[in-house]
Length: 233
Length: 389
Ligand code: HEM
Ligand code: HEM
Ligand code: SF4
Ligand code: SF4
Image (cartoon, rainbow over all chains, first blue to last red; front, side, top):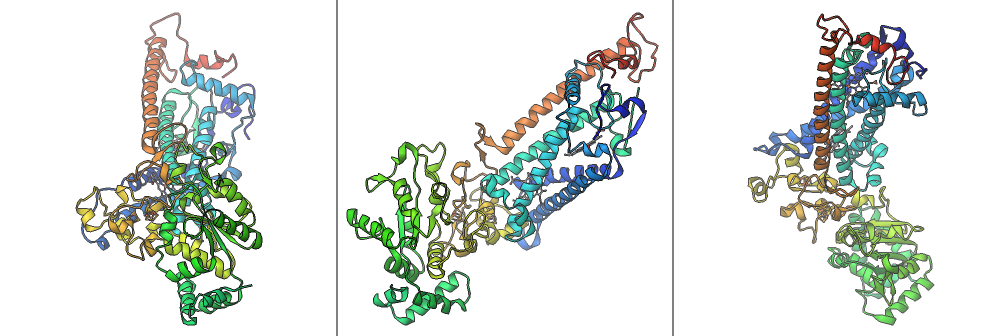
């Protein structure tokens, strides 16, 4: 865990001009899952609202089949990189753990959270410096995005297991989700609602990343490319 | 004690018909012909099992379906003549006579009889909304269930609650697994279930003396293991992307998939697309109408049968996932735009006022010779927390 001291969230950020924050596997994971999410949202909506009917013989076309196939493939990709990302939280650097462990027990964390809220509501002049995530970002990353990702994987594979059938791994591992949420149609509804959480998260994520990149004292966008956080002052 | 076979012979059934029935049963259960002799043997040697059929809050469509079974032997012979000892709506006896049979069987065959329940008990007002034999149905149900070997929940009413349990469920109609918790319960959902499914489930339990293998939700796997959609003959059109867009359009005439007009086949577990209805004549999709999901928990509370993305009735909101999610995203988008505007405004003021650009370099345009702190200096001590930032 990162140590929180009296001065700032991240002591490294006080002394160094640049910190290696996101190791290569984290960066790779980030961009793969970002692409997977975009594909999942797009094909997901096409599953709910299929494109206009194609004509001709049924055997000439497999349009909806391919749309669903793309969704399931992206779903598998997302699930696999998520598992690998969890593995990396164990073996990677301290910053790699931030997605999964939020120091809710630390007073310092909440004080800095308050500062971050003030910064976003224009009440504070400057954000604090962080190597990894600021407290607000970390909170959203873990409790909104990661939780939703797990939820989407669980409900997604529960639905997938309906097609692959009784005894398939997806049905065995995730079939219990269906009675838990009511019935199959209810799982579709929850899966669909989760899609909107992903969309809303991504909107805020992109806005915050671009805004912070411009207004804060640290690099943001380039950090997810190079891995280094550099400080401007 | 009498065996099934004894009773059969007494009823004038020939050995030949009996063997035929055994083969038929084996086939309908998907067991293969090798099982026919085993079924015959079981029926010849096992004492017969009484079945008691109770009716609660219901529309009796399960009974209506049942008595139209395409397997008359199963329905008439096994149930009406052999085993169905009590069924208020079908039996000849009525009133005290009928009640006496119930008392007799529950006493004489303690722990041996099968209880089949159609409908469900309403629990509000101490069960006042369904009175049978002068008493709340819930009392009768609990009394008969107490010494039953196993319980069959007929239809969506007994299994899930069905339309009488639709919001706001004024009578508090409750599926039976919520009131009978100490017995194995076989759910046979559907509104109604298919007749052949009903007879096959009872026959299985009578001949093999055990309940069929159940899925996670307590339904026999052999009939509820797959969705309508998995065996629908319109499925090739689904995969091809050929849909009925509106009633009576070209696609409807061509028999395209009914997904876009709300077919619930992809979310409904029932063998309608394989066994079909009315002696295998048809099923809704074959008649050009989507499945409404009548075998599913909560199908009555999810809005229109013609919507693919259905209604949500939780947290006091009404709307589908897209209306709710879309509203949240729109509010977020507006907030982001407003926030971005304020951010730009603030930065513009900062830049011009201080004489330093955003990186803290001198711009030579300081307007206020006295003030204007260099951003980097502000950073040294955080004004707001008083701590170093
Ligand atoms: C964040 C990630 C995901 C998003 C945004 C997403 C989005 C969607 C959407 C919008 C639907 C349509 C729901 C409906 O209205 O019926 C859907 C359906 C589905 N999704 Fe996902 N999904 C995600 C992840 C997954 C995963 C990981 C899987 C696992 C393979 C998966 C499997 C499915 C399946 C099987 C269906 C139903 C397809 C059908 O009914 O033909 N999804 N998804
Ligand atoms: C395609 C546009 C995207 C861009 C430009 C982008 C950019 C970034 C950047 C710059 C960071 C690093 C933030 C920092 O410096 O602390 C980041 C982190 C992150 N992004 Fe994205 N992102 C995109 C899409 C997404 C999507 C679609 C998701 C998931 C829905 C996502 C999930 C995350 C997560 C979970 C992190 C935290 C990584 C960690 O702590 O290990 N991103 N993103
Ligand atoms: S008509 Fe209904 S059950 Fe048949 S393929 Fe289309 S969606 Fe599936
Ligand atoms: S096709 Fe659907 S709505 Fe019709 S009886 Fe079967 S499960 Fe019920």
